[in-house]
Image (cartoon, rainbow, N blue to C red; front, side):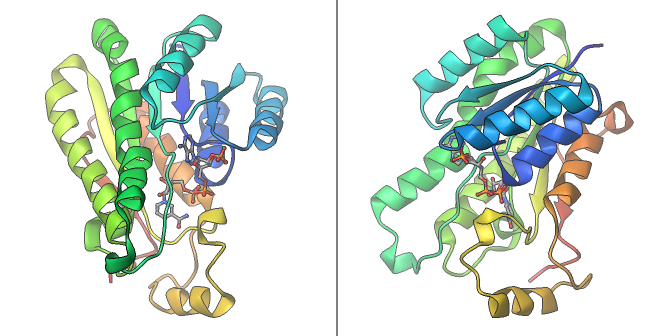
Length: 245
Ligand code: NAP
């Protein structure tokens, strides 16, 4: 059956790899970006040329309801109803808790959590109608164990974990699976402000002794949306090289 996947925040990093991996499985792809149009379009062209699937780009700030509604109706018009949703778009910020402003807090929750609510709300009615669909939320190990100087980030990712577990219970009867991938430290732009020494120190805390790649996350997402995972829902799959601090 033809699958149509919306991957939020797929202009670069983990989202871009997920988009490519799902295209490899034969899915048509909606690439969502906020600022990096060029990267999104280059990726879409590469995916179309390489995997012979439909792949279109959609500019949308996924924390804004009107933009999400517009993106969703354009995807339905251009490609069809979304059967796979990957809530990947996210931001991080390092700050002492006492320095986190109300604006920082709201921005973190709007982009990391409200986006998942809005995107899921847009695709779920059709999934319920056709009695199938899969959703994967990208959380973080810091949502499981907490990170110092990232209280708002950790809290937002813990919220996504709760979101996953609760929604999975609610929509299981509609044959919709909802899971979560919880990455450890992954080599993307998100960690570009860390120095070599910081990354080396992080490595020493990782039992497998290396930083993860976007591909490590994409492979796990591909498994979770596939038929191989048809009896898996409501789960938080940690992909972190064994790191538990
Ligand atoms: P990244 O390299 O910084 O990429 C972030 C992506 O999210 C970009 O495509 C960006 O789009 C998009 N984005 C940001 N704000 C958006 C918004 N308001 N609306 C739409 N798109 C938006 O980050 P990453 O490392 O790939 O992270 C992807 C996910 O994995 C995030 O949820 C992150 O929290 C999670 N994660 C990452 C790590 C890690 O170590 N890297 C660890 C744990 C969890 P534009 O480029 O167009 O702005």
